[in-house]
Structure formats: C-alpha cells, structure tokens
Amino acid sequence: MREILGRRRMTRWALRNAALVCATRWGWPVLPGVAPRESKRLTARLTARQSGQPRGRCSCPRPDCAVPGAHPFDPGLLAATTDARMVRWWWTNRPHAPVLLATGGRAPCALSLPAAAGARALEEFDRLGLRTGPVIATPTRFALLVAPYDLEELGELLYAQDWVPSSLRFHGEGGYVPLPPSRTGAGQVRWEREPAELGGTPWLPRMEPLVDVLVRASAEVPDTGSRLAY
Image (cartoon, rainbow, N blue to C red; front, side, top):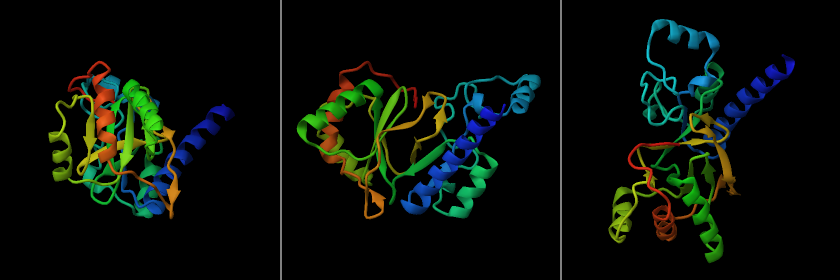
C-alpha cells in the first residue's frame, strides 16, 4: 500500500511540475485535458456504471471519443494559460489530468504523424544533418514541435506538395498536443527527443525544411484515415 501511494504522489507532482515548467519557464500556455477513464477514481467509475451511461476509454461524455484522455473539455481550449496560480489550482484538483499544450500564436506549433513514420523521419533528418526540436511520442504517434507558423505560410507549403497524407496533421492556432509525462487513452506520453533550452526556452526549428521528409515518411506507412488518435 505504501508503495502504491508513493507512485501516486510521484505522478501527481510530475504532472503539476511539468505543467509549471511549460507555463512559467518556457511561456507555453497549458491546460488540463480529460483523463483516460482508467485513471479516474473508483468511486467515479462506479457512479458512471450505476447510472447506465455508455462508457468509453475517455472520461468525457462522448462514448466514441476519438482522442480519449487527450483533449480539452472543461475548461475549454481558450482557458489555456501561463499563470502559475491557475496551473497549480488545476493540477491540485485534478492531479491525473494530462498536460495539454495550446499550440499556435506565440506558442509552439506541431506536426504529428504515425509513430512508425515519425521514427523513419527522425532517421532521415539525422542522415541529412537537419536539426529537430522537441519530439513528443506516444505508442501511436510522434509530434514534432516547431516554431509558430500561420495559415498562409502553411497553405503555401502544402500547395507545393503533390499530395499530403491525411495521417500527417498540423497543429497550429486553435490546436493542442498532450505533453509528457501525461497518460492518455493511447498510452504514456514521453519525449522521444527532449527540449534543448536556449536562453531559457526550448529551441524550435522552422517547419519548412521538415515538411518534405514528413510527407514522404507519412506516405510510406498505412494511412490512419480521418479518425484522430494520440
């Protein structure tokens, strides 16, 4: 029992501390996501079961949730903040909530693709001598954090491509990605390549030199279709 309680405390502090580092040291706006159902308290699970409501892998009301345990719900995405007091309050009250980065604006954007394609892309970047920034990994997908870009810039890059697989996704303003050490319905979120701080904040590459490789890598693995997964 003591060992179990110790693991719970570490998880609680790890999520809160990770959120505080992102918000206060790096200036990245964060907010809590909905937790995957298995991380909710037993009493909450029993309540849902007794109510007869359909149960999915996510603790949100949608039984067919496409991103279980990895999306905003209450609060919504617009509540993302860098305020330390708000961050502490959220994770004190919801210690198992995933840490979500609200992408775009002055915050990092992201490009995500299936994990197998992501691993191939990183090998190709290394071979070409292209430097990547932080890379987030789950059992199903990789997400490369990049410098902020706008829709016009993205549109020009995509227009130059013959075809862009739907499994390659772009997380700009109005988007989000889960950050380590969160746990989502897809599994544990971790750093495949950890942030390298430069002047107190993680260094981020521009997306332009990365897109061609990511498109090719995504095209070489089975397309996951339109259903999201993290």
